[in-house]
Image (cartoon, rainbow, N blue to C red):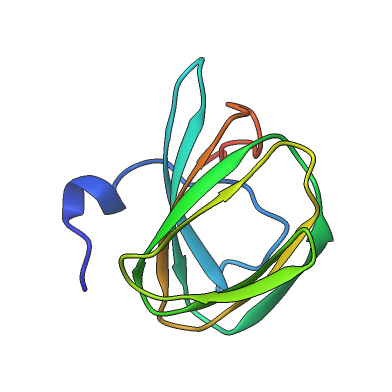
Length: 112
């Protein structure tokens, strides 16, 4: 799956991961943050919490542990992470995932 240019030209986020691991394209509003994550290398996201998050896998695979329950998500599958619930992830290279965060400022925009 190749994303169209109007999506790949959206702003990126300043994430705590190297640019050669995760690429982002984002739309932000006062109500939330929508991010398309393109995963370039396998990586593990350690356990953490924040406000609510909903996501869906567009391509590839993500193994999520949400509140102690581990499940593998593949294209077309969605997940909901309630606010304050601990979660972690193992993300496979080549995956494309869309997440919507309750917090509009969950991650800062990357300054060009």
